[in-house]
Length: 506
Image (cartoon, rainbow, N blue to C red; front, side, top):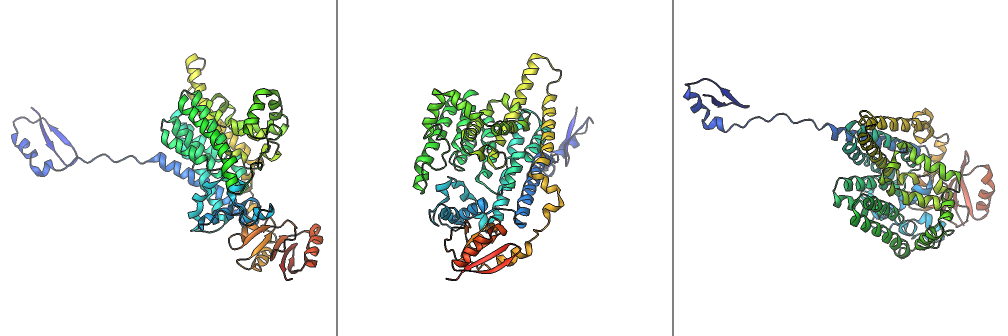
């Protein structure tokens, strides 16, 4: 007969027969009240490591952007424009962007929503209560780009495993679209990778509500974000969730038309602005009609320039083209097509921030495409242990990301001269000190971000608006322009190392 004695940590079996005292002793209240000590909890290794990865990525992005700001390598376009808009929200005013409004002859109360529909910028307003200035936008963008990492990690771990999940996170963090966008300071695209990654990962996991909320947030980033939403709907439709997919596609189309034809005009914009497809039609329905009735014409526009082909190939290369095996790639297709069909060469180029709109989608598609390839190989039995392919692919795309670093802006972080002070830093700071606070000042591209936190900054475009102050980098080729301002009633109060400060006196 066995007897049970409850001790401090666990019950112990005793095989000592004829000892009823042990049984009675074990039933004493003091011993019955002592719970078993649970085993120590496992250290939450993966959440901590993913958080560390996010922090490292955000730190690298912030270091790059803040160094450029400190060394006068950021631009009045577009950093100052976004700074003015977010400051308006932070002060509970309309998001006016006087820099662009005056340049376009729309006045100082021209709204950012009339230029690009990005009301999501308002969520950054509380950050301006902590630090009011363009540096806040640079750090905010760094954090937003890094926040896509957890969703990429979750998606990859679910399909390929833990080790590939970390490798995909690194490949995304170092990818050339992110590097290129970080180098051009700040744009509304900062919100897009995390929202697209969250939407697709959550919807893939069967979490409909958070996925749809992410898509709703995506519609607030820019007037053409409905294309991304349409693409996600197409992915849902072809993967079996037809009602949901169709509803999402309709919502994306409706948002496109509502924002462009109703909301932007209500904010003071024009329906014909930011429309770069007149060669295909006057609006979206006409472009669709052209695509249906004359597809060869549309195809010719898509591939009519070598830059378009190069950009498309470079977008697919970080996933070794395996993103093409996944229907998730449909989510990126409308936005990529929009860029390549436009008559704006900047949109075809890889030199700006447009590739960041689809980078997270293509990485998710690459993961899904690899998983589909593994399943096919397992069914056919053509490859022994096809599961290893996921890890090999993840290692390879990390190698691709690393090989592209020397050819993209992150390579600057490896050069000591990147951190060196601007050669004219002393003269620049002395010139900035001459501009009073609270004035209207025209500034050249290098000075705007350093003044927008305290002054109303306009673009210096030589148009003689009789703005009270002007500060600019003016080389020898602009000396005649400076002389014209002096004859027009300005006093040249600073002129050193091709940096000038002019004050209106008459």
